[in-house]
Amino acid sequence: MGHVVKFIMGAPQEEKSDVKYEKWTIEENSDGRVHIHLKNTRMDLKIAVYNQFYDVIREAHEKLFST
Image (tube, rainbow, N blue to C red):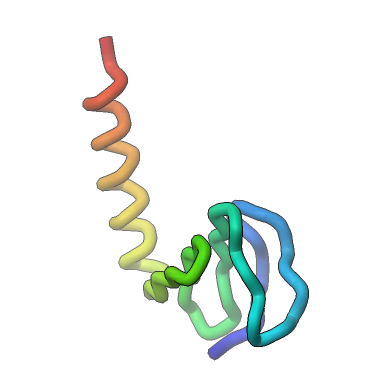
């Protein structure tokens, strides 16, 4: 697992093994992966897959909230 390069969303957490992510946190790591955290859930995606996931979510959001 790589080290955090930047936080895309959310604030930095303390570096402990029992960190609780109470709010959405999205971080880019040095190993070329993006981690999406919320509570005890973590998605581990390659950057290309994260970009595809982002596009799908953005399109769904636009369809849900367009007038």
